Length: 103
Image (cartoon, rainbow, N blue to C red):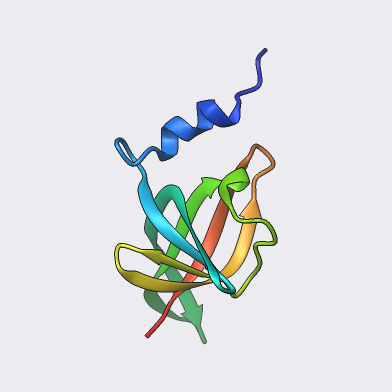
């Protein structure tokens, strides 16, 4: 069984198809990262009272992230600024970035 390559995975994140181009801001450098943005619905219970909210996430190829990526870097998607709060690499070359919208 063949293992998919970075080129194979890139198809899923292509801007011409499903992807969105985002600007990754790290210290004083910016780079473009293609990925899939989703504003996931979440429901949280606080003292047994449910609250509806959204959790913005961005899926991309881990290899496309800049060297030294870290929590606290910024990502701009569709002219909205986000702070990256968590990285979740899935072990197959794709990472889920949990975001927090800047106000």
